[in-house]
Length: 348
Image (tube, rainbow, N blue to C red; front, side):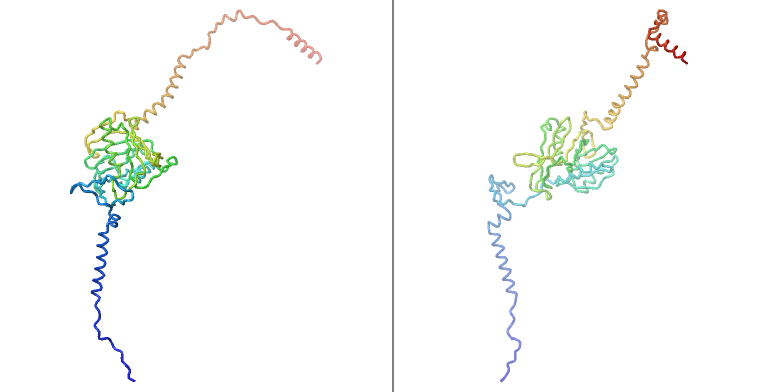
């Protein structure tokens, strides 16, 4: 019986090139089918806007709640705010500055700056950080906190004295909001009365208003920033929108801005407005000390006046009055006492 020897097949090997080409073709057909599918296109990119012209696109007048909106948006209002402070700032001012950074998604931080008199260096720092707005906290004498709001590089610059500081960490402020959410800005009607208040309103809107479609912002509006003018000062409050009915809960931080002056350029230029009702903190402390010293001075003056008006004799005395004074007659009790004394002497 002869054995059949197995050898290698002489058939030519099949090439893998046509199979790869067929896979690519099927994958491309699937991609084309997905792109042509209207349901998938709406899910990915949202409904196509109705174009009235090649340049202007308008949103539809009505929209279904189930329709998925397009997430492809452009960041047009590119506002960047540089929030930092000078050296020597107090712990309360530092915490308020950190709170402002947390509620402003378009803010940037910077290490503390060593500032004396030349504030023009801040413009260079903002340019290096690619920022067009500045919030600079400046502490004087470790007790007076000033806030500079500036628009870089053309200005203007507004200087405030910060009073009555309260942070988010205080127990009384029980509200809460989403980090990075966009706020609603509420302004008092008094901001439209005078020109300098209109200018300050525009600066506050550009600084505290989070730009739409900012990369770090959240697509929610759940808190309100209120600016109210009371006693010629700006009272800033931050509230959470708790329910749809409009009930609010304060979040913080909260402080009062006392307007000092407005400059034409960014940390330079002409002085275009100065608050006539502004009183410097040093003058306030001087007046308080003078008022406290008035009590001591008044007491000294009263003492000197009493010494001058004090008579040498407490009442007038006439020596001739003693002539008409007669000694009192002895009483019976005195005689009995004398007899008892005599008896005692005899017995001895």
